[in-house]
Figure 1 (cartoon, one colour):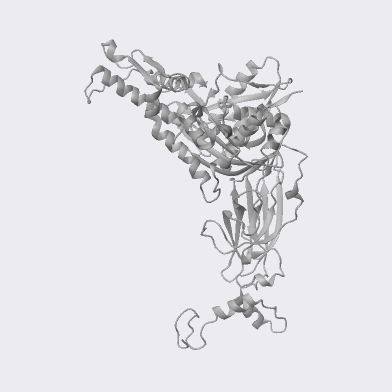
Figure 2: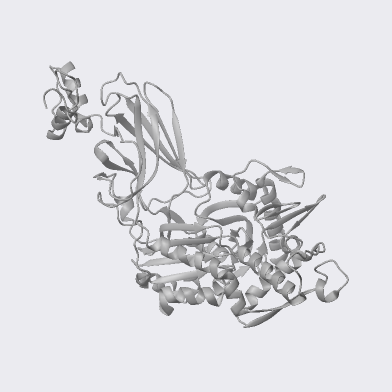
Length: 592
């Protein structure tokens, strides 16, 4: 049996994993560590991974001379200039993925993996263009993406698969909230999840790109240089030139020191011939670094990252007490630092906190397990349309299975404009803020709004508008609307959908059994500046028409008037100007 692979394409490191015939996980790493996400171009030669990383003079993300570090961050751009060479991010990523695949082929002596098919992890915030470019780059490298999955879901599934009894563990956490805390070299990502009917469901996400481990490595380097200056008795204005390639070596030493101090109290950093000069004692870096010094250097960054937990859990959308979480899964290289470990323990306690011992590979292993178990994704929250009178129409129910490679979901809906006087029909799309909280009064989050041109001369509910909603293989939701008379199509896409990983295939899919719902929504939750919806899916729903417009319609159709609700009667009165001075009811006029 040939198994598909899981790929974690990360900002700082990447890895391919597979489940073997014996049911064991295997990762195609580089001497026990993931491959650095670095591509270097030296003439016609392409150097990738650790060899390219070890030549870097700085730890920035993006194009650094003839080197690209973290090509994932370039996704969505048209072109990049790599030392005079015009390239696209797709080209760079293709070269890097080819390196990963070639290394895996060379390491896979038993040929247990089908390297042409993969489940690939992506950040929650990766936009539609980025997903399309990533799929194209993988395809050019000979890898077909069977499915994309969000990194936190892959990490969480990898955690459960490592347990002796996965299903028992899922049952234990059923209905409870879980926080996935992923702090790597490039970014810090937090995802609040919930176990629902055996599925892993995303609830809320938050990220910070300015506190990654690379920033800490730079801070350590600056501190080491300052300590060397003090040791050498240099004056403040002393500025010896650095020998070529030495800064890259010192950065590597700083990264290793950070890892070493996770288990030791003290470590030695030594780089000969760092500066140009004749005095060996001044030109070589020879400094001891203690754990206490490291914690002092990185204290501000660590506190900034830990504060992201409070920002997520205390937000209006979540409002969750950390002590109520059943699990905090901490992954990524940074979480092994004792300072971060201690702070997480203070927040979540020993019983709920799990520091992953393989945080640098749990995402790729989770993706490999998803591929092996042939799991699929489903929509975590319903995709809803706001109608006139602020009611909600469910377009795609929660629990709907999301497409794999070559598949798509298509929904079509005929709508009618209840108030065409300004020539615009407003389609506003929302989702509940929390899973299993889709009642009318529950808070909503707005995706965005489509504004469609309609004929203002048409009567209310007269012009039909065709709405189509499509979810493609990249898990991008496309909306398109066109009015029957004006015929000017308007399109918008949304990529920040929240997913659930359906682990228990036999679990009842209650949400999928439900028919489309229309709920009364009173606009609770954070204030959003959006136009009032004026569409409905029922061409005979006259109670959705504004009262003053319905009165105008009835005056023109005296033989076929439409009944007015008390609310419409009140609206008609409010909007009628004074018969003498034409002032509106809220203003002082001659009748006051």
